[in-house]
Amino acid sequence: MNDFPCLVIRGICDYSDTHKNDRWQRYAAATAAAYAKELLQITDATDVKSTPEAREVMHELQEIKSIARGIISDRKQHDMLKWLSPLNPSAGHLESQKKRVKGTGAWMLEDPKFLDWFSKAAKYKTLCCYGAAGAGKTIISSLVIDKLGGYVVQELKIGLGYIYCDYRDQKEQTTENILGAILKQLLGPLPEIPKAVLELYKQRASQGKLLSLTDAKDLLGIACAQYSKVYVCLDALDELGNLRDLLKQLCDSPHSMQIFATGRHHVQGIVQEYFTEGQSISVTAHESDIRRFIEHEIGGPNDIEPDAMDERLRKDILEKVVDSAKGVLV
Image (cartoon, rainbow, N blue to C red; front, side, top):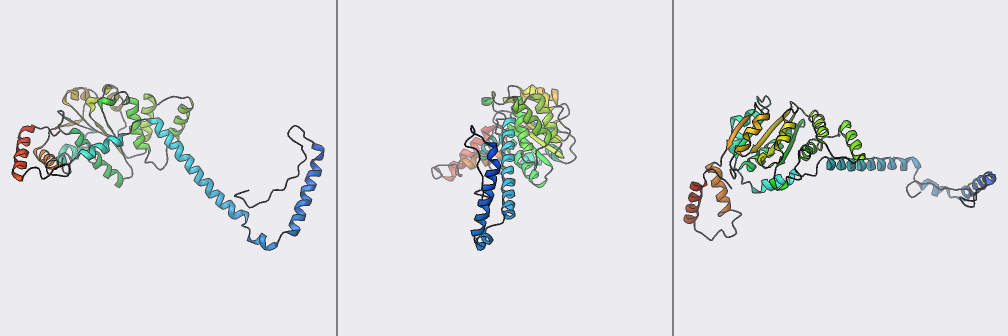
């Protein structure tokens, strides 16, 4: 009654739920009708005209219902994405972006192997970058992800998923959760979640089951089918405790999936067992990258005391660090 312009007149024939009297129903109805007639006789016609018509309010109620349905749908989608994986790859990416100095790693985006992998007619679906600890592999990954992210914005039929592996988070970074995190990133931007995905989620959630490897693989196929091409970036494969399990699931991934991965040299043999036709790039910190990084730290925005040394001392430190870096950035 608060939302719909109406007045309800009821004739009561029951004393309570425990004292019903069906014989008095017709008398109650007649009393209600008589009261309604008398009320209408004394109602001012001007007041009636100024009252909103029911059809106007019905239109507003339909809009409210539509908004409510949208909220419920968004909530269900949020719950489904949360069910897919507890991992939050965007947090790791944001941290890597903060550490990256502008201009570092640009050589990767100009490498012929990367350009081929990134092209529409790529010869190989896998590109792996191997390097020693501190060579800047994670910085490279963040740069590639940003490059792909810009491409995804321009091309609506291109999907992107990524994960930053971390040895400190091996309990959470299971194969199921990693695949689920990639699925979240692929399904989230879609204008509508495929019915098959929602139905499987509804069934598993009602049973109290988590995402299984079989389900993850099936859903990955459904998600990839929504795009003409899907890019997946995996940083620091050497920090995974279940590397073989993940590679096994990805080696026969949909043809539309392009995989970019980084890791230390000792995992190269394991990766090649599953991806026999991929290409690889050796990652070492280029002198130009080291210089940019040191200049950013000494006398740059991260220097808490930029006036603590003169220009000559700063240059001497820069040259010394560059000479002793030996391909290590951080």
